[in-house]
Length: 557
Image (cartoon, rainbow, N blue to C red):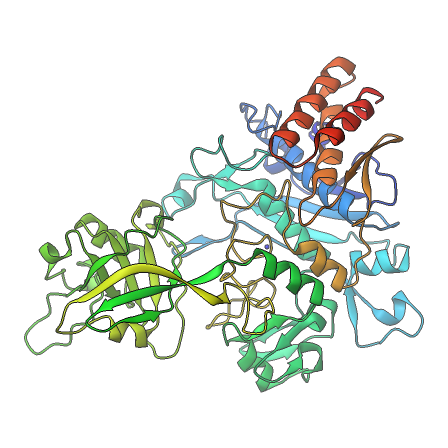
């Protein structure tokens, strides 16, 4: 879909993480930022959400180290995993704000990993090293990550960016400004560099598979009943599959079983008059999360067009040369239907909100396609719920007779993020989105997953990684699924991984942080650990017996 001892590192210096043991992967940071910027920014800040850093650079480094320690506790590799990191002014334009980007620096042929490996199959280098139990490309680092320096700037925030939040324990209650959670994003981006990335895509508008790989091998096209590794290198069928939403799925049994446990039943928009019917919808990526206001009469927004002109129902209200809204008074206290077209989705919704609408339904203007509505430049101003429907459903929601919705009902046979056979969908929107399509879990998944294409406020990557570990195992990664958290030589008995939660991995990462921030003060280190152990227990992440054992181990450090 991210320690204080590292805060002084400068560009091109390899910064070693605290050494891990017990078969865990050792992930270290290569800080590419120059002095005074990015990970080395000296701007004073207040500690927040369990992050004790006192400068912006320190907080970023602490968050990064925490994420590397989490992944390191979950994975097994005898080869060090070296992650390059820097801040850069990534894309921040109307409708597209990039928080981070990452990828494997190199790919290694399977024939180099093990005797008999296929010459046309390539692993991301970190996975190849883990499988080979040695560094197959010692002259280069393994993963490249970049994070947005733009989203903290006023110009980008005017376009809808909220800035970074550097807490280490979720968003509540400290992330009151609803900022992007840096730890969640780091966990997501490192995941891409470790292997959550496909080799299939488009190049100069031509579908192409660069090589076979573990992600593509787990991706299945329902349209063509074939694995993505089985497509030809240049294959028009693959191009169609890559832009058909919902029809590319993950084929691993463990991942799909876990996804099915998470997935919520799909909800439908129920219409009671003039004829009873239930319709699919998609929540927009902006607006109020409470969808209960989607009840009552649906009013079609009308534009003030000239006599004889076609009303496109854009709701732009004068923006981009579009007509003003003609039936403004009729929108007060209603659910408003608006068509896609010309101005951005959030502008339409904001115009309706300002006229007293209770909720907005956005209808697509092309047949047969779902509509994923991003927040654009005004999404952060929209507080009413916004959902989207297909063009066909939009046509049914308008007419001479009043159309009334009774709100949402649950479909007992269908689930978000899963196809009819229970397989987890991958993200294949139309049109193709370079850098996002195919290499993510489908954004339709509810609740949200770590490897979806956008960071969401409900993620808690500090303590839970939903199906990510299952996906990595099915791509071939050795993991510490059955391991327990050890503090020094003391075994806490707390599982590193437990049913998608990662209490032991979290405890290991926190232990490293407490040791670093205490700077040799043993009583401070012990207090830091005991407070965190109590916090894990308060969140029902560890049992009372595990609390006692963890405190015994912490006292021995």
